Structure formats: structure tokens, C-alpha cells
Image (cartoon, rainbow, N blue to C red; front, side, top):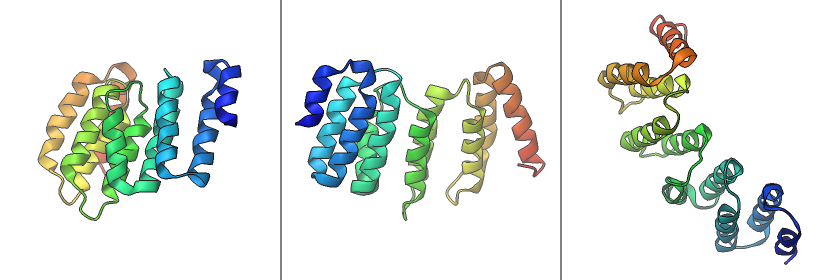
Length: 175
């Protein structure tokens, strides 16, 4: 096949766009099984920071092609395969929220996983988690105090300052 031939002649560090093109082509021309096989091969070949883009595309494809269950299965299969992006976790949170029977326990699980990866630097993630507990019909507003203190312990320097400012603005209705 043309794609496989191209990989023979290219250095691995420049192959990401080719893997993405192959997956996109496969989605339109091949079966779901074939497309999934392309993503799995790509994830074995593409490592480091480049794999982040691939994981996000794989998760998007899984949701488009197989819905929430498929996306959750892909998410679980990749959950120990670092590195990630915050967007990877945010996608799963959004997919869960789009479900008719949205499960708040799953939303919490996705936030907790994201915070394990990005909790020391991403103040927005902490704020969004608190807002979810406050605004979701199955949220527990009483969890917000604990989330706030965990954020204060984990966030560093400017991230902590940004969080305090955002939290104050939210408390006064300006955010």
C-alpha cells in the first residue's frame, strides 16, 4: 500500500502528518476495523509529544464512528499511555455530558485523571471542576471546598494566583 511504502522512506519524527492522512483516508474508504487498526499502528510508531495529537484524533474518531461507548473504550485503552493533553480529558468530559444518562461519577473520574496530569499548572481545570459540581444537576456543591483546597495545595506560583483571582471573580458573579 502507498502509505506503508512512504513510511519506509521517511524518518519516524516526520511521519505524524502521514499517519493522520492515512487515518482520515481510511475513515472514508475503509471499514471501522481497518481505521482502528491504522490508529493502533500509528500509536505504536508515533511517540512523545507527537502522540498527543494522534490520541486526540483517535478519540474523536471513536466518538464519531462508535459513539460514547467506543470513545470510552479508547479512552480507557490509552489512559496509561502518556503524554496527554488537557484537551484529551476535556473531550471525554464533553462526550459524557452529551449523554442522555450523563453520569456525574464518570465526569468526576475524568476531572480527577486530568488533575493528576495537569493539576499543578492548569487553574482553569480546577475552576471547571468546581463549576461542574455547582451547576450539574447531579453535582455536589459541598465538594467545592475540598476541590478549592486541593487546588491551592497543588497549583504553583502564577497558576495559584490565577486560580485565586478566578475563584474570587466567580464568587462575586463576574465569571
